[in-house]
Length: 231
Image (tube, rainbow, N blue to C red; front, side, top):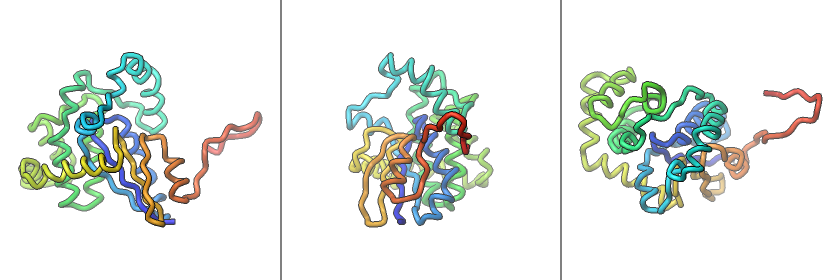
């Protein structure tokens, strides 16, 4: 076995949040099989523009299905039933600044801090009162409220997001996802123990990922009358 899972995400992507929630919850178990998991911030708007993809909510029928059925089902399944999208979603979905700060934090601090701050960002964006992370003052408070950084470090994080080096990190990660076939997020790239890589799209493809990686897993199974679920 062995290998790795590269997860390309945008904070403004609901299913990126759900994939992250699942992977973090399962991280220790996945890595006990020798599979490394890495989270890469990408700009979903750039991916959509490059590939011609459209967000599901831009199609009226998909928007109704997503908001009334699929969204509530998925958030409950992944243990995030309190998720609510911002009412003014589009202006807040331009997450370039917070994504850049995540790249800097990922490069500069421990993996544990990076994961904790990433969870904090997702929570701030998707949970009421749905903070607007595109506003510098709001983002500054979110970074400070994570409890992981001193005031000087918070300032350094925001300053770093304006440097060409960090801008290029976000651009590079987005380009890498595109080169790996991405047309949306979350985009998963799994590499097995033989070095072969394949793409997987969405937050509900982990059975496929595990099969490709050769990991033992239990698939969804319908029980006969009288059988008791193991869950």
